[in-house]
Image (cartoon, rainbow, N blue to C red; front, side, top):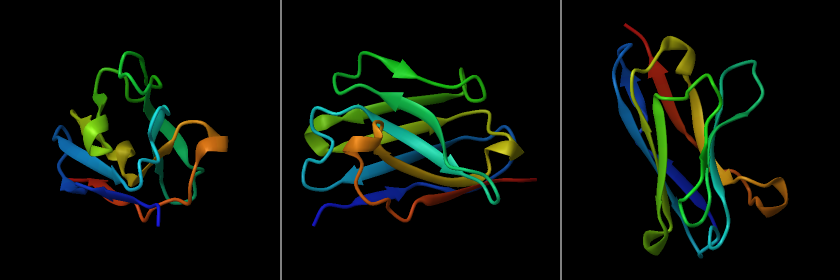
Length: 117
């Protein structure tokens, strides 16, 4: 059964860092660009980072640019999100999935990130 398992979230103070991991089973990310998404209460899910299969091209919206870094280890079917200088507005549940909607599989449970003093 294909599935996504996100981990690495937690409670961190403003300015702190976290590294999220996403393990994908069944090679479902093979040859596909992958994204990290987040959803805060009352908000729609939004893309916060994406990376091509080769890792050669990444994308970040302005809200996280220069603070978040996405990477991947294709041999391990794993995608990472390094988050630095975290802000309270980064508080959300974080998910990974294929970047393109037509490639997506059912969402995992996500990992909660809470930025608070």
